[in-house]
Image (cartoon, rainbow, N blue to C red):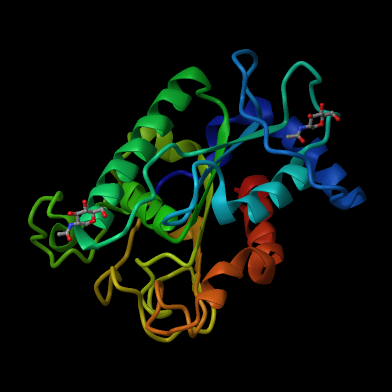
Amino acid sequence: MKLPCLPLHLHHHHHHLLLLLLFLLLTLPSASPLPVTPKPGPCPLLHILSARETTAPPGFGSSITLTQLLLSTFNHSSPPPTHPTITAEAIDYPALGANTSEYAASVTTGTAAVIKRLSTFNALCPETILILHGFSQGGQIIDDALCGVPHDFTGLGKPDEDGGRVGRPLVRREVQRNIAAVVLMGSPRFTGGKRRGEKGTAKVGGFAARPEGFSCPVFDDRMVSFCDEGDPFCSDGEDEEVHGGYGGVYGGEALGFVVERVLVG
Ligand SMILES: *[C@@H]1O[C@H](CO)[C@@H](O)[C@H](O)[C@H]1NC(C)=O
Ligand SMILES: *[C@@H]1O[C@H](CO)[C@@H](O)[C@H](O)[C@H]1NC(C)=O
């Protein structure tokens, strides 16, 4: 099934996006702005939802690097001054993982939190274009919300009659339509470069890898997932520094992907 290209129903936003494109071409990101949680009031043109990694304290965790890069790139006050161009918030979820059962419970709670926040935000700001970014466990909960929860890992999903190879979104269609780009880094759902949108040097998947041949037809075009060899979580390595470094290593490439998805659709 082919979904309509994202901005199709957002015609009245097109001139804003074109202005934004002009600014992007004419300016470079300057100092990193601090993330701003949207206050009640006019809806932003773009909104980033980020999810941190396991054991990071509440907030953005390592997802801050790309989040700030996106904020500083897209934040130009020029379109309508009455509407913020871009805002960001961190998904509120436990991000625990002392052992397998605690991790599974945290993923379950986190996935539900992603679904709920997308739904409430979309109800509040039905025209806002969404960018999702997840780091490590944060990547897994976004993947699960957008591409389904496999039966074998958390036991939450329905038994997978097709072997769990076709991912189905757990978010409503109105929400699906507004999600322009999804960037995962160090996600345990990584399969070793066999799934569409996977990038990086890792050839082996993570501890919660999707099955071989997995696809997520609704989001495959809008999603990238980075994982490098040596990462113990999205692959089978032993180098935790690899896991923590993706924002710096792949931030520019991720930004390019998001800019293209948001502006070209
Ligand atoms: C975006 O720019 C405006 C105007 O310069 C500023 O008031 C606002 O705080 C900035 N927002 C972010 C997220 O940096
Ligand atoms: C997992 O870790 C949590 C928190 O440390 C602990 O309360 C729980 O008993 C542990 N469960 C198992 C099965 O080890």
